[in-house]
Image 1 (cartoon, rainbow, N blue to C red):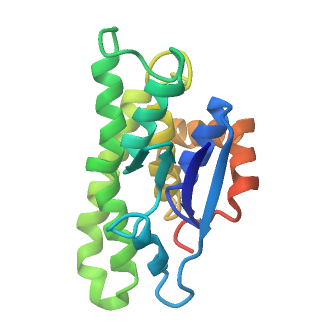
Image 2 (cartoon, helix red, strand yellow):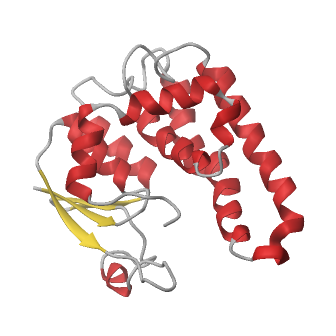
Length: 208
C-alpha cells in the first residue's frame, strides 16, 4: 500500500488531495511541527535526509519533492488522466506548470513568510518580495484567464501543484487583486476529494 509521510500544516496536504482524486488506498504517517520553532520534527530525517515532507513510499519506491511525487502518481496510477503523456499535445505546458509551482512561484511566498517573522528588521525587504509575488500572480491570472483549469479541460497534476501556491498567496490577501485566481482556488477547495483529504490529514492552516 502507498504510504505518505505527512507533516501538519504543510504542502504534503496536496499529495493527500491528489491520492483522493486518484481514488487510491493509502496510509498516512503523521508528523507534527514543533510548537515553538514550527519546524518539522527530527523523526522525519529517518525517512529522508532533508527531514522534509512530503515523502511517498510505494513498495520499493521512495520519492520526495511534491512535483516528482505528482508526476510519479500520474504516470503510475493516472490511467491516462490528470496529465498528458510526453508525446501528446500540451505536455510541455503541463510539465512547465508542474515545476513552476516549486520553482519560480514558491520562493517569494516563503521569503515573505520568513521576513514577516523578522518584524521591523524585515520591513525594507517586503516591497521587493511583494512585487515578485504580484508578478507571479499576474502571470498565473493571465495564463488561466476564464478557463476552469490551467491545462486542458479537466484537473491535472499542475492544478494540484498550483493550488498550494494560491493558498499561500491568499494568506496576505494578494488574491483580492486577481478575481479569477480567487474563484479558481474556491473551486479547487470545493472538490470532494479536497475535502476528504482535509478530513484525513487533519487541520490545515498554512503559516500556522
